[in-house]
Image (tube, rainbow, N blue to C red; front, side, top):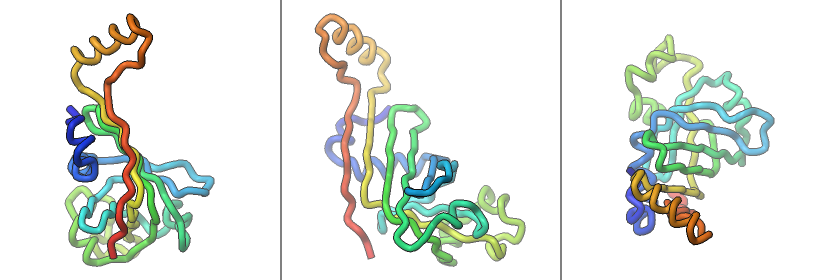
Length: 169
């Protein structure tokens, strides 16, 4: 269940905490004609970045140019937390990051392992995020729906916030 008080008091920390448990989201490069694609995120809080393993011949990599920006959208497993992150995206052939996030799950996609000639990474430097967190309580949700129908007021079932993140070197 999304902690709405944390969404209000420390939304950036909550974002990274939720992202640590997200196995996939939708990544798309702004201004491209390509649809967003499912990608597995690897969070690097200290640089406000999300990293993605991919292949150098993928449409995502082919779309990324100097100055490109992207969106990455996620939904928590409990469906009570939604976020859309945006920022600059670049192809970065970082051996350090390949090592840092490598797992048997990643290895399954690359025949040549960490030395696969098509293996590359994308780095999304998050500078902006929009977050929608809602109550997971069916009792509270029901109460808010009933109250809204009786009072003609919008139900209070969640929190919306936007973040501007500092850019790290």
